Image (tube, chains in turn cyan, brown):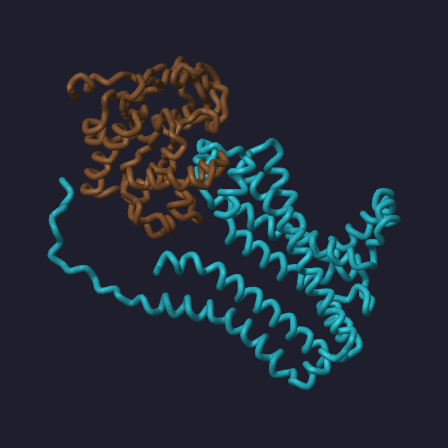
Length: 278
Length: 219
């Protein structure tokens, strides 16, 4: 018997009930958003302007704010300095061992922070590490803070730059080569300007990551007040002596700093698509 | 003249072998072929963007097989045009001249000349994001012509253009040929383009470039 392909006389069954699906999506996603907002709200409700001012007046906390800002900025610059060429190399030139390098670059992301700190501590106790420390003291000094932050933050910056260059078509650079550029000129004049939003994102991510770094710093730099104390160390030290008000006040300073950086990155990052829309 | 002799190359699993063809100086050659036949790869090899495993490429009598892309003097308009998103149209036209460290006056003169030829004088301060398909194509063409190339390689340049714009581009290509005398190799899979533009028609299929029989009917 031949199949019946004539149009059906029965109208399609009514099945327009999409709202339970969307309600499910909305419910599940809002749970997480609400959790984040509730955490922030709890912090803000716990503290008073008086606590904040008191925290800002403390010389130890002022030192840790200064050291955090300085070390995060240096870490960001160092991370970009390494991440941009690494991302470009891996994206454009499939060299032997690329996959292995890719896997190695994930290690700082998945390794427990304390283990990173311990590994750094041991590394700087090896003969080459000790020799270096004869010239510049690293362990339990300010350079160790920057190295500990860099060890983790740079991995995030490299990932971001790799994705950025992967998303930029190599054709622009190829055209630049035919127009008389060498590889270096094609990179500086074409690829890097095209990647500027990715560089900004990588920098933001590295900065925010460095700001929150605690485990490696605790092990590798110690938690000495007015010496290697950064903001997360302050929160830890204040908590350990039961001064929760100061710990929360410092946490708020970190939240505000992180939000400010995120907002700045969004504003700069969104400008290009806005131009396209307008 | 473009003279490709027994060219072979391999990209991953894909290979072209023993490709031989010639385009005499000043001629407009159109290379047709199915998607995936290797037209783009062949153009990239001409431009020096792919390494050959065998054969030679001579451009106007000069062996360029082992020269870098910058030393070949080929104007290249790739598929999807690849305009520089951060530069204005003016900067696109001036880019190669700035690399060559030409004087500011020489650059200004050349940009004016090119923008007049291509009818993009009113777009000089715009960035690629705001350009229509036809305008973007003119800019890509201008950028390729800025090095005063002996040879122009165009990879599906009229794709995704509406009919009116396409007609305008046919006329423009005629003007470009007349005023520059450049030898052109144009890749497409559109027969209309081929019949409108080509002096010579080649077909790339089964890893071979063949002079197409249609050529005799074209003129």
